[in-house]
Amino acid sequence: MIASKAMASMDWIDLLNIRQSKGLPVDVETSYAKLYMDPDLHHSSGYFCEGVATLEEAQKKKVDVILERLRLQEPSLKLLDIGCGWGATALAAANRYRVDVTGITIGQYQHAYAQSQIPDRQTAAPLVQFRLQCWEEFTEPVDRIICVNAFENFENKEEFLPHCRRLLRAGGRMVMLAVTADRPIFRVVPLGRVIEWAERAGFNVDISPSLARDYALTLDCYVSNLRVCRNEAIALVGESRFARQVDYYSRCADFLRSGINDMFEFTFTLR
Image 1 (cartoon, one colour):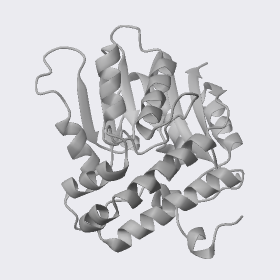
Image 2 (tube, rainbow, N blue to C red):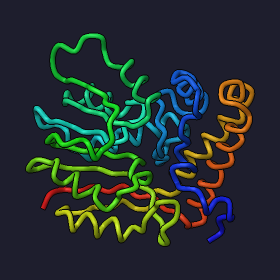
Image 3 (cartoon, helix red, strand yellow):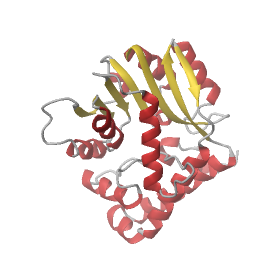
């Protein structure tokens, strides 16, 4: 393992999903995110497929692939987005497929922004709602679930997939994008353990090829954008936060390129 002693004491959530600084207004966090993320504010890996060159294109491709994988064409489906961030994927699902969507997040600044993106009038389906809620507290039945680069940050990982299995109605599907590691590090668990937990919960499991390169390229874009907007970023969050985040994203990209971490897209269907 090439991580330094300082890095070894940190969780992946600290490295990859920097929490809001204490005392910063929620609108400052979103203004900061707009400096380096894509216009839809995806704080997760994009898909840099053939012909995809920019961060915005990669994030749109990721959303396209994941929503297609969910098979949302059936009428009256209910979709749960766990770790919905700023809400872009949930809103895309509702707009494209006319499904009812609930997005949950524990980030106050993300929740406030996502709420602001809901159309003023929702008098008919689809309905989109965002909740400030952890996954353990969500108990309503749904037909589809997505979880995009949020699983890495959960403490109670072993219970997560059984919980999702209990939420899903007959014919349900779930798509999860998650970082793995052959040796557990920063709360990230081995690929085999994710498969074991899923099968034990009652899922069939389909796994993509490695997407580590895609996440590394996404993080490269974040770092490049932050450096271009250095002065604006420091004015918003301070030099220490800026420097720490650039360093963390760069190291995470190195972990993915070196094989310390990997990433896969999982599709779970009910047995």
